[in-house]
Image (cartoon, rainbow, N blue to C red; front, side, top):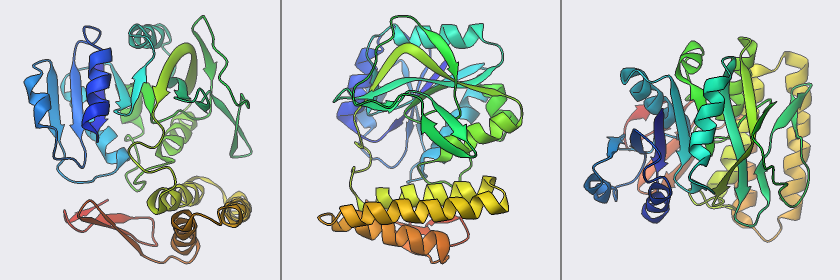
Length: 306
């Protein structure tokens, strides 16, 4: 098993490492947009892969996939550094289930917020749209592990077959963040491969530690990710029907968020980028990210096009 995390925050990463002490056989930290990771070199069991600039979630996952291939690993587990298994044996259970299910390409466990609200508990596609299987304010605990077929997984934590991800060329780096895992599973399913939701294994996710929950950037990226997914994967009529749905949904969010200027600004910028093909720029941690109207993005500070 090949285990990786995206490094953004020192304290959260250390908490995750401590919770997995003695559980994993190879631990890689993918350092994406951070310069405070040097302390990790003191932990001899950890390998560090430094990207050196803000490359986005999809690119960081693909870097981890490449490392897994080079190390001849069959499976890869990815978890955000602001998430952790509620029990140390959760990771071993995840690996065992994946090993037993030969036709399973990728799977996520239950992901719960610290408030015990659900972040991920499986989903179904309905004419290209997704609805959560479980709609409740509090999480329902399962004592036993089982696999339920799902239409997408969560990037907060997943286990995947290295071979299956290679068959679809990994994550699409046009997505900076948000909806890239939906796109990946969509392409896997088109190849006849299965995605799963694994009950009985729980991961706690500290909500939006890596991107402020109500930030301008996050609301923009969510809008952009949904629009980009529709453009890439939906047929003409469904795509335009979804655009109407997206505009209505974001308009409602805009109206009710009267006290949050940043969220409103992100929605406006998302609309301009998705539907009017306007180029949008953000300055993040002394780096300039440029999102063009053609679905590409560019890190001007690092001179990297994605």
